[in-house]
Amino acid sequence: MTPTLDAFGLVVADMAASLAFYRRLGLPIPDDADSAPHVEVTLPGGLRLLFDTVDTVRSFDPGWQPATGGARMSFAFACATPAEVDTVHAELVAAGYRSHLAPFDAFWGQRYATVLDPDGNPVELFASLG
Image 1 (cartoon, rainbow, N blue to C red):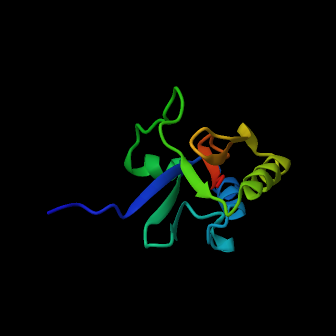
Image 2: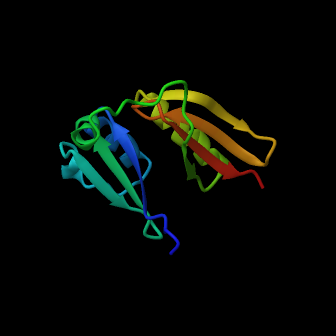
């Protein structure tokens, strides 16, 4: 038997704030999900993104604690053009989200930027330069 990657999840401090952030990036999150303790979003290709509140996770893992010392994973969102990287980054920052890396032309051939979601997780924005 070979396991199949089916879903990945985020533990969030504020469900509504997290869902609002990811809606801005185009994820199809139902409007009525903001007060739910668990939310699932099916992405293109069938992979699911799961959002759980801290209380939900602690209901089955009472000792759960958030990771410390920096992120070890991130989400990467492809933009259609380098200009879209700049636009999306600017819109998120204007909406109050923190920039980690302002848009720049990376040596690996992409326009690249990083914004932090409400829980401090890095969210990469990128587009090919050529």
